[in-house]
Image (cartoon, rainbow, N blue to C red):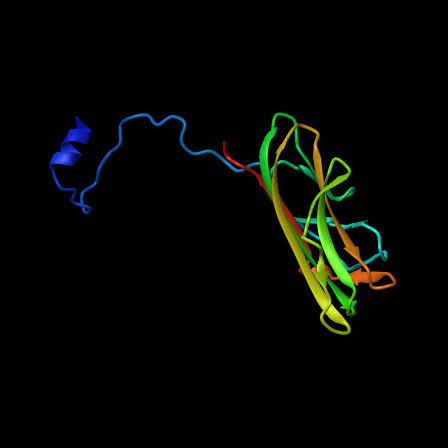
Length: 170
């Protein structure tokens, strides 16, 4: 009846309308969700994938981000589709050296920036980011690694480094 009334009369937006029905299947929450960062710079090895030491959190709704092992772990009862994004920066990289960022799932590299970011000049700060989504099971974990080819170890800039993710509402 109410739908017919709305269709046959114009709505006055100044009026107050009370909803007395029940809505099912609408809404939801994007949890678990976390936003994490590195508390200080750290040194990344040359020409090898190095795990970012992301050891601090802005928030973590389900205590699913492990600040000791620097990874997100899907908690019990929270399997599903997840979205992640990560970014970082590496100063002091010269031409033609490069820098890349990658996600690791359960210890294996699965997604990275295309071929990395190549330095256009001497002592450049290179920025890299990546985003990806997975259908994850309880206990699966996601980590962030970087790769740089400067010829020696380089400091990774904590002020530009973060990793966040959340469960997608299904």
